[in-house]
Image (cartoon, rainbow, N blue to C red; front, side, top):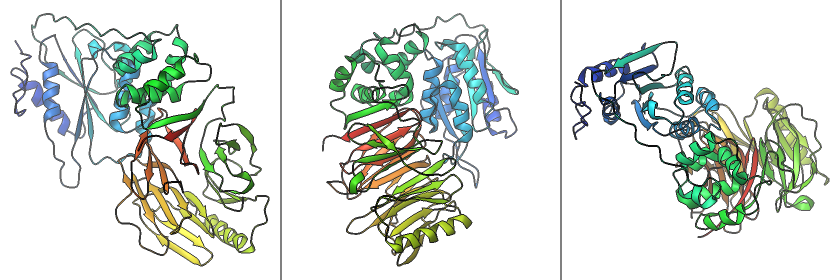
Length: 528
């Protein structure tokens, strides 16, 4: 009879009795033409879980010119489809609001991966929603970006894919009762849900659809991926507080704010889809903060249709719309000190929306020259400071067009996804790329060799501004993480709102704005 004896401590040999299955799995892993889904089946006690644990422990090296294979072990016991999707999204560096979003996120991700990724998923039969999880895994097997090894007990429903490899460890092992699933906490108690295992809470909310629990359920499902990644009760309380809609039970906010006191942020305000007081501004595609003059203290919030709204930084009150005639989506905006706003459309072309103050002729000539250049060589990112317009391109270069000439640098490998510029004693440009790096550059000098920040996910948004304690850079990556970084050194603060981040901005007071398809959140740094 096959044994479920754990693998030897050195991890070099599979559990006794599972050696044939181990050989079959290794053969599947090394065959580039093998199906992307492998099912490890067998009766209770046949050694399935131990075999996947042994496989996860094996170090792998890539062939010459290839990266190593990353093996990610994820237990499915007790998990619902939402919890599995959020766990996998966090491990794979993408953002997925729902299980249905995960496959698309993986298929379209630009995340840097140095080798193949294999997911090792144990105990499907013990999941809280085994059928829904099986459907989720079947969809992932068709994306072509990853391979899956799924353990399931004989007689239970397995994921279905066009092509599947089966490793059967079946024997005459006796029945093995499943451990009882941990009960969820009181789902209406904010302190209890923040203290509990977030995957248990996620299963509780996902499977109990008849009660919104004062708004906690809606907020949790909106920000669930971030809640699963947050550190401790205080971190989860901050994320949950930032995700609450205006219709939530008013007693929730003070309770969550008290619990979030140790977190490095204080929430100033948040606006979500469906909010009416004040109204939600719509999906956020781009953000900016006005540079001074009569419009000081206003935010520029652009949506996917090209509409740019004006909002007050203090409380998100609407102040009208920017008058412009750009057709289609705006991918970047850059307010200037004289009140003019520069816009970059989805084709990479420049548009100018003039303010009320007259522009100096040299600035008119500058923007006309940049506009002409981008009509021939489209840009991918845009920023502006006094006397300069900064543009990024798809080849990794940054171009600073100034009244004194053109300066260029090539700090990135691949497309420049965002640029920002800060007017200070030594003006500087900050750029982010699809290569996941954030780099500093003073036009006329060589770029700083070491990146200001670097992660495996592409940079999706960037903004910098002078602040009372020195310049601050806000950066967002495609995996949902946002960081506020003091350029001159100091504490870095991170935040995840849950949904994919589309835009960030730093205000003159040092506050952080985070925009998504369904929310706009304003946070203030707290603590030294």
